[in-house]
Amino acid sequence: MQWIFVGASTIASQHMISAVRAQAGSDVTWIVSGSGDRTAKWADEHGIANSTADLAEALSDKGPACVYISSTNEKHHDQAMAAIATGKHVLCEKPLGMTLAEAHEMVGAAKAKGLVFGTNHHLRCSGTHRAVRDIIQSGQIGKVLSLRIHHAVHLPENLQGWRINDATAGGGVIPDITVHDADVARFLLGEDPVDVVAQMAQSGMGRGVEDSCMSVWSMPSGAMVMSHESFTHPFAGTGFEVHGTMGSIFASGVMTQMPVGSVTLVTAEGRREIPCSDHSLYVQGVADFTAAVKGQGAPAASGSDGIKSLAVALAVREAAQTGRKVAIEYGA
Ligand code: NDP
Image 1 (cartoon, rainbow, N blue to C red):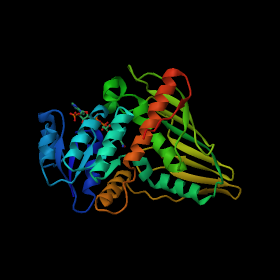
Image 2: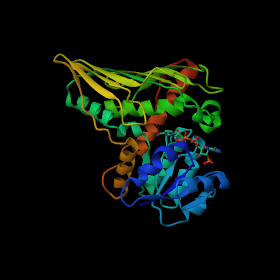
Image 3: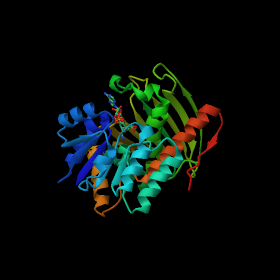
Image 4: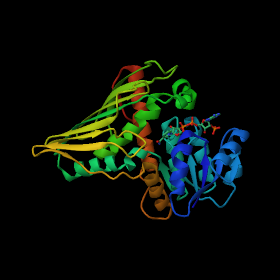
């Protein structure tokens, strides 16, 4: 399967090109990015046959069936709409767009054309998150009472660009990380948050956008979710805890791009480590997407999942801006 990559980005170069090449018979045949010279050099470095700054030129190639979009956030909508218009399946980075209306338009356009649309929420592809979801679904911890997500990291220096200083490109920790945590909560608990309260801060890195956020979400079942994201915490570590009436799950070091971390189940019977698969999150995500394109199954995270994670993130930001509890609007 041939792919067009849109956005000569860090995530493409560190994870997604190799994730595509890990699929039998698949390769990236185009890279499209803003500057012609930089894009050509990037193509050369990554062994990609074609490069251009003109998206329409790449999309006019009938060979590739799939487009992966990892440009800055404000470009996702228009690039996805152009790809869908030419009949390509789209795997788009989170957040899908700058607004809920954009996300709905993208996902709706793909659906109208019978195309597969996926959101690259990698965390739900990990062995640890899938193991935790299985434990919850098996009933071993009883009724879930609460989920605490710890996702405060230190943004590496090479990523301290638009994310920390450019609201128009979709910067800020809420569109960057809270959006992932919203998907994690929905994936683990199998329900959609109803409303949120939140506070955000600039704690040393953000200039004009928030670099830290804490929020609390209520779930339809009555479970409470507490979520903490930051760009400024070098030694905090990541993870989450799920607490139920009959047990607790401690997932440590698992809010990451790598297949690492541990899962511990604690019940009346004692404490036990849960074995988890250590497959690559991104290879799994591309495998699920590729299978869906071939008519087998669905992407790990669908377009609808991308709409919902964005809706939660937008509500968190509104709650933090206004100081009020915000009911989450998912749209039609
Ligand atoms: P980068 O900042 O590395 O690249 C994004 C865009 O910035 C590029 O497409 C390019 O824009 C421009 N750019 C990058 N480097 C340069 C440069 N040296 N000179 C000029 N322009 C440059 O993005 P990330 O990889 O950090 O993020 C890309 C997208 O992926 C975002 O939407 C982000 O939210 C998402 N993401 C998802 C992750 C996941 O695990 N699912 C992890 C990390 C990011 P242009 O193409 O317009 O020229």
